[in-house]
Length: 140
Image (cartoon, rainbow, N blue to C red; front, side):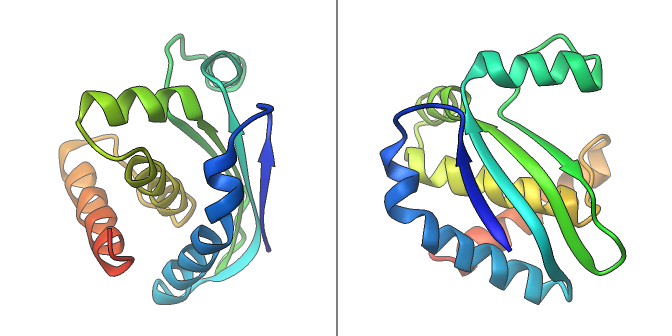
């Protein structure tokens, strides 16, 4: 089951399009041969995510997404925290639609839950190809 939660009071875009995103994430997981356990997307602001990054990962910087993986074998579960502030800033910086950047980050997080990593150049390239594949598949 995929659920959407909000640590911010007003985020109307995802409330209107959330069911489409959930369907696409289900397609992604099915395509990767995995099953949905419990995936929670929590939309928050920069400060909320910064605090989590410091507390749990001991990192002292802002980020767009943190994915905490609770998956067991083929059953994918986790908590995904997304900074709406960072998505907005990144979409402006890269001259991209907000909704495109949001979808990219949601896909990116699920790829982390699937075990893909982006800590070195080779892994980053593989993950980027997967992101692009799914963005194209979902017509974005």
